[in-house]
Length: 378
Image (cartoon, rainbow, N blue to C red; front, side, top):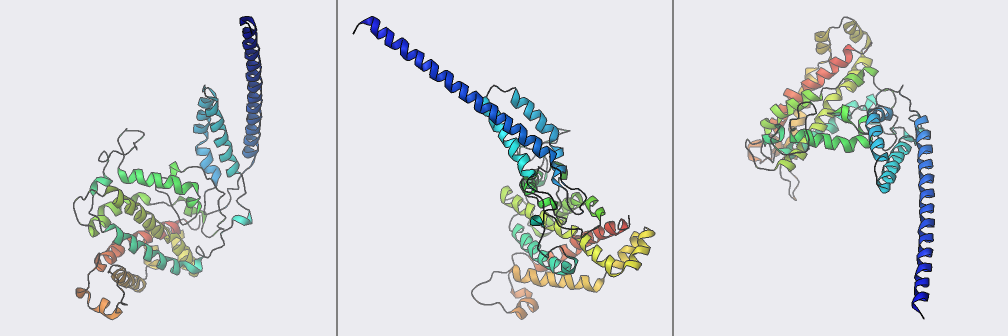
């Protein structure tokens, strides 16, 4: 075994190794071309699919996809110039999955129809009563923390959220609402006619097909969103009205309760559209006459039923009395709870919640009703 024969063996091995690497590179490049070809075909097929936007009461996913079209194009250009082939593959794959998922079904597909009865006008009263339960529980939960007004002020808590125009750091509640709506928006929460985003301009693309809710409301309902007013009312009136003043540093816990309260109250107030539609169909002539005159005050008087409102306030007070006490193994005596409130210990006084409901939630619900009715004949 000579040195020359050893050199020959090394050279032969190196040649074989180079051949292997060259073959592997060829296979890899072929695989990349196939993936690119597959990605482009998926893209073209998904872009050729369209969603019907003639339905009322929801926003089709194409609305959300188009909002992100320019941003996606910029991201694709950046990814194409990247030196990392794995980065290109991930970007191409995720983009294709998004488009394929969005194009998986038409809005008219009966498999995606809403089969529940929750949005039928015959069930408006029952839905409002169930929403009362959710709101009362949420308010009681929020009342265990102090006001913690830092949550609502800009530049107070270091959250990664800024105003695009001014560069000012947003409030923590805005950051939490935006983040929550990113998740909820992807799973079609805001395609439902009874849900309204606080930041609709920033909703993400859908990842599952939208549902077909039918045509319950007039299409003018899509233009009505008073969440700015609701948020201001909640921060300035509801929170100080039921929470102890001061700061307990529980910003995350209190903020989560705030997000839950805001979404529930928003749904309850905007449900006034369904209430207005039911009232309009019950008395079409009376309402039509006032609508043609654009008489907002007349509409407010016609839709107001003081006896019904008094019953709502009494029901909310009773619910808050039961929900707001500590229940033990003994069944509470309803007569004692309601007739001797001074002997009961509540997490939050029932009359406070009833007063907030009467002063703020119910009047804003009627404002939505009037705004909807004024456009009902358009």
